[in-house]
Length: 193
Image: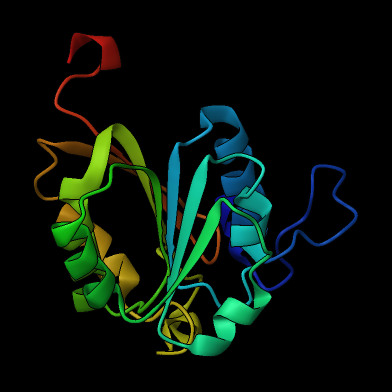
């Protein structure tokens, strides 16, 4: 079944008659946002703010980070949102000076292994206990999808992070382009921490 979903005929919805959007991950993240209702949602890498704007009804506060100033033009205006025009490293410096607790973090900026790992390690201290970190582009369907402009080597970051999961747990949805869910935790039950 997974092979069929990842094939070039790929990605059918439950009726089997239409192609599933390659942005299926946005629907899933939107659902998660509605389910967990984060106090703070942070998205690293915005492009045209499609997902970010969908998250506005679910979160108390949202911060979008992108080094391209044009990305901010796509952000819906709301008292709840903030656009940070800069790199993910620049924003984490601001967090170090003015710490915030992130309930839901979406890492979708630079997809190179090293950049994904750096974003994870930089932001992990600011993620709330039992907060979620989502990684995009972690299961490319083939070598062609591993181009720098597409999934790149983000999946290798997940392989690296899987080696020591004492403070978090990981699970990848193996449908192109892939989405990995990470929960920060020391104990299985949130009310035991």
